[in-house]
Amino acid sequence: MTRKFKIKSGDEVIVIAGRSKGKKGKVIKLLTDKERVIVQGINTVRRHTKPSAQSAGGIVEKEASLHISNVSLMDSSTGKPTKVGYKIQENGVKVRVARKSGEVINK
Image (cartoon, rainbow, N blue to C red):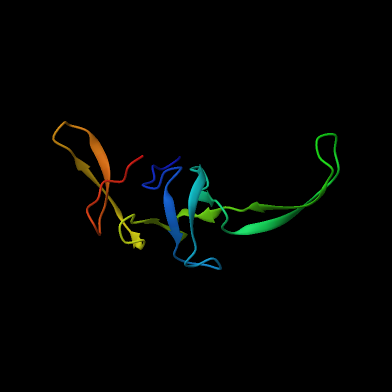
């Protein structure tokens, strides 16, 4: 069963644990069934590929996934990690809010 996460594709995040701790990047893809995220420029690995009709082959660098618990949403005003909350605005729209600053997270 897949869970719903507070981090969405396109969010700016900070890695809070592991080899890439402290690095910032943008979420490219969310793997909900495995509870993992792929962050642009973070946790890069080298993949040795065979030549095929589409590619020449060789060593390709690409991003590997991180567990979602190892990343935290970046507060746009302070640049530090923050938790995510929800708030219902006056017009009835439910929006995500940064807990530290109270700013609405635009998506």
